[in-house]
Length: 61
Image (tube, rainbow, N blue to C red; front, top):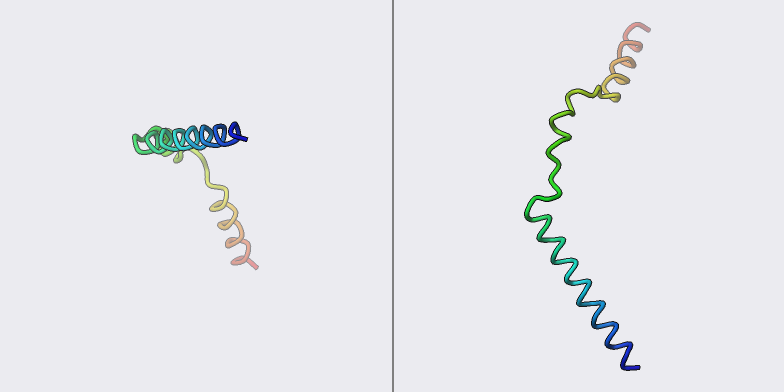
């Protein structure tokens, strides 16, 4: 029965350690996306294309 308490304690400590490391990585900017904004203008926006076609069709009807 005492083994369960030891394993539970160790798992909580490991979980807290991973959470702290994750927070430090997020705070340091490791997960910031610096590539996507630079290439976003190269891709066409499908929603704008569809809405503009619908508005043209409704004006001609």
